[in-house]
Image (cartoon, rainbow, N blue to C red; front, side, top):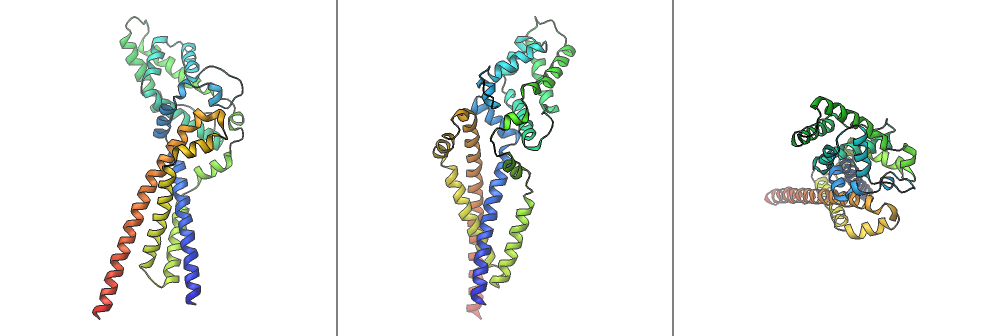
Amino acid sequence: MKLIRKILTFFCIIFLFIAIVFTIIIYSGKNLLNKENLSNYIKNSNILNMDINVIFNLEESGMTLKEKIYNLGLECNIPDKIVDDILKSDEINLILGDFFNETIYYLIDERTKPELSDDAINKMIELASLSLEDHINIMLTKEELNEYILDYADKLTSIIPDRQVMIGVLPISTINSILNFNIVYLYLIMFILLVLIVLFSWSFYKPIKYLGISMLVSGLIFVILGCMNSFLNELILTQIERLKLLVSPFITILLTIWFKSGVLISFSGVFLILIYVVINRIIINSYETK
C-alpha cells in the first residue's frame, strides 16, 4: 500500500505540473489580446505602414492601412490636416488597439463586425477637437466635426473583410477554446490534486513542497522560453514568411508575458519550498525534543 500511495502521489504531482503549465498558457493567451498589449503590438509592428491585404490575409496587393484609414477619413468629410493629426498622435495606437481587440473576438466568437468602443470614439473626438483648435483656418464647427468623426468610426468596419477570408488556415477552434476556457476549472483541478496528494502522502505539509517544485520547474521552463525570442521567431516565421512582419511582434509580446509569468511562478515556487523546509525543520526539532 505504501508503494501504491507513492506511485499515486507521483502521478498527482505530474498532473499538478501539467495543470500549472496549462494555466500559464491560457493566462498568457488571454492577457496577450487585451487592449494594452494590442496597442503595444500596433506600435512595435508599425502596422499602419503595412499592406492592408497582408494584415487581413488577402491575396492581392493594395494600399497600406494608414492610407486606407486616411482616405476613409477624407470620404467622411474630415479635413486632411485633422486626419493627419489623428494618425500622427500616440493615441492612435490605443484607438487601433481597441479596434483590433474587437476584430480578434469577431474572428473567434463569430460576433458581428467590430466597432470602436465609446472610449476610443471619445478619444478620437478629443484629438479632432484639439486639431481643429490648432488649425483656425478650417471653417468647420465642433458639432459638425463630431458628426463626421462618429460617421468615420462607424465606417471603419468597412475595411474588415468577411470572417472566413481572414481566418484562412488559422486553427481558430483551438484559439477559441483557449481564450474562452474558464481558468477557474484549472484552479479547481489543482486543488483536488493537492487534496489527493494529502491523502496519498499522509501529510498536510508535504504537498507544499510538491506544489513548490511543480511551480518552480514550470516557471523555469517559461523563463527559458521567454529568453528564446530570436530562435522561436526564426522557427515559427519560416512557416509563415508572408506574415512575418505581422506575426513577429505578437511572438515577442507573448514570450515577454511568458518570461514575466515564469519569473513570478518560479519565485512563488521557491517561497513555497522554503516554507516547507521551515515547517519540516520545526517538526523534526519537536520530535528530537520529545
